[in-house]
Image (tube, rainbow, N blue to C red; front, side, top):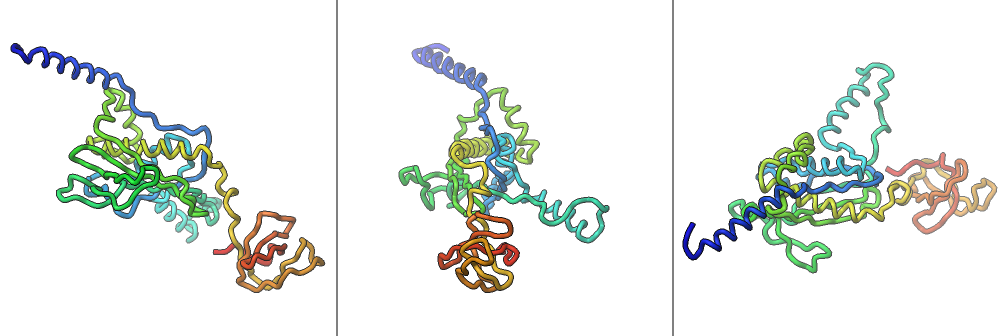
Length: 305
């Protein structure tokens, strides 16, 4: 090309070529890995089902791949796997399975945490070009700034991961993730990165630019969430308050774990008590709803339902 603009065109061509090389040489993002399990986790999809109109798989499948690859949690299936397991349990309870199958009540692991993946907001714009638009609320840590949702036109995504402690219902972590089209220029290395998502039932996120952007936004949020959990104990079951109990029959609360000790109060059937965790044989130390503390024989109560 000739003329006065030729030098500028040459420079722009050189810059474009350099950018292409840089992207081809760049490495795919890394899923964070934990040295030990933090606890058991169930992933639940949000109620709004924003992904359906975009012809994407549920983000639940996407997050399950992050969790499995990171080794941060023991993943519990509360979706289709649970439905299939319940069918097997129904066969066992009806006596159809072989003897010694060892399938019955009291075997399922409890989830320590529930993780919900969502978009940053859900106020749709006309034409389907933006899922989210103006925020209906604010997230902590962002100085009250409004956060966008998923923009198909500009190929950007803002998503949210919320982690809740099942026992205390405490919100352990809430992290926003952001990504844009320029975040996915990894060259040939992208195929290996996308492989687990195809196998894990989240292949729709690998097929389009906006799907890949959403995936990267969730990875951004998950990486931040794992960082939040560095100070979290790996034993959520024992760190939480002991499950409450109710009296199954009339009884008494004693000052000491001894039937000859002074009686603190009479206990009626159905009364709720709160174990402190102190035990001595069949005796449990408990508190009642009025603040009284004492010892009760554990055979007189049952776990509250």
